[in-house]
Length: 126
Image: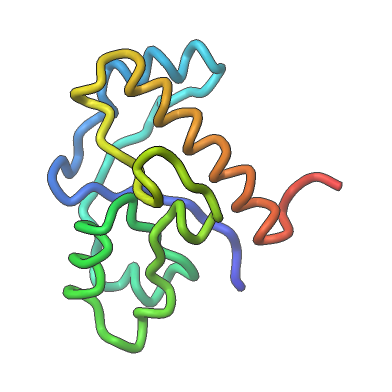
């Protein structure tokens, strides 16, 4: 694999800042969202990135639909690739309707998944 780069894409809210509740929970966990904005995926991303993660099956299906089949091996369901199961099985749910607890749950799930991801890619500290 090439250089590890992580970029979040959002098909519906291109150019927007993270939700204020995400920013608040992030601050509580010493995670900064400064200079973080979503953008729609571009066709060259399929060539430029080693891995492209979808947070749910709807986005996975969309990414597979808009990409050339030769790039399908790069497109993964995030939690499935990171070997994390949660209440929703292998999808990161939208925390918006779950109140504060929804955002806390999603942060917990993603933190575990990122930890596993670093292990899978052999990027964790020895």
